[in-house]
Image (cartoon, rainbow, N blue to C red):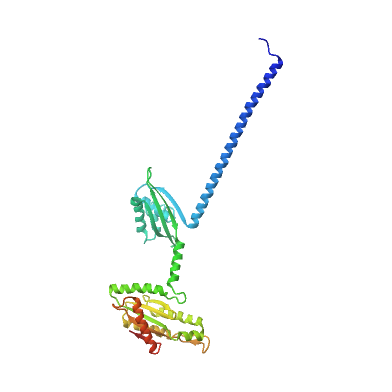
Length: 346
């Protein structure tokens, strides 16, 4: 067979080069497409990672703002080991480094330690759920109020796991205490409010009923309080009431319960007091108030308020504190009728 003509050879060479170009072009396009798809997936994955990181950061920020901590670990070793770990996490402290199993237990308030330890044991050994509120004490003596929640997971594995949270409710507890204080204390005089006085008085009345101890009650008010207010103004009247309470606190015992009954009227419950002892205390209080000399506008520039006081003793016939107070109020009326600035007993 003879040699191919030059023209035919050239044509075949052109065709071959074209085929190679097509193959290479297709390969390059596929390679570029694969690279583009890989880049797209990489960017999408990065976007997902960034989104998850943002969620994580926001969750951590929300937890910090809420005073919340989350924790999880495998329950390994003897009971004292996980108890120690739990206390350490609850107290937001690091390991003591002393090797003492219960080193971090000291940060839990002594009055709460036994309850917390028992709650952890119940969760691990029985219920699988932990719910406990307690206090911790910092190195400077600062007290934190914490609430812990956790659940034990006993899935297949070398050891069960426990997942939980600890919430710092210190600010809430302080707010609750401030609210209770506001409700319990009369804002003007500092004496107990009427409602809180009745709460404390009912407890003392029940104690008298149970143990048979004597309990006396006083009712007192400021003599001619309205004329004092009219003559010197309400600000002066307020100062009279505050001065009365200060005098009462200096005269009465710490165990005596002083409450503002209403307006210028006050009630006092005196635990473990006979009628004679209560009458003597009332006379000392009346004398302390009569000795007050308060600056006032008008006249000689001073005023000398006085109080009348009624005294009585709780008896087995009294159904409740209200019955005792009504009798003391009648004794107060007797003191008024007798000329004011006096003590009367019933």
